Image 1 (cartoon, helix red, strand yellow):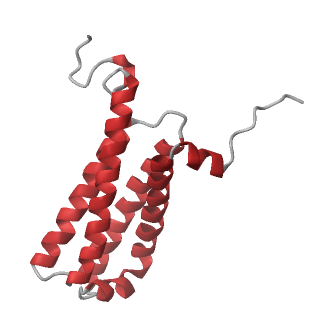
Image 2: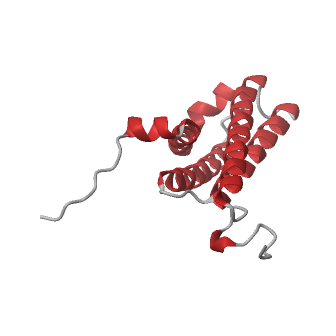
Length: 156
């Protein structure tokens, strides 16, 4: 019977890099809330002050699907031995865009101000993702890109 080295438990993994663990938890929340938006958008939309019209439900479900995909991709890379800096960066950009989109929705009266709670959660998540990305990019010695090159594509 071959011997397989044991992996550290969840607690050891989380305490080894708390920021990474927090981001993984947020990725799980993103997947679960996105998945809930798909079938239950009609019940969720009134909670954020939006009319649950068929068009809004469709759009909300579509956004939920993208939340599942981006949250799942982020979780996948965070659980890898070496997470992808590009995935972390683009996840931060997505969360920044979500903050802006919800904020614009509130300003335009599509959502009530209670939706700003979601928007500011996304903004805080984006800040954490950018902090983690900067830390990853600074510690790799390669500018954070695959293949050892710098972010600009030139060798040192």
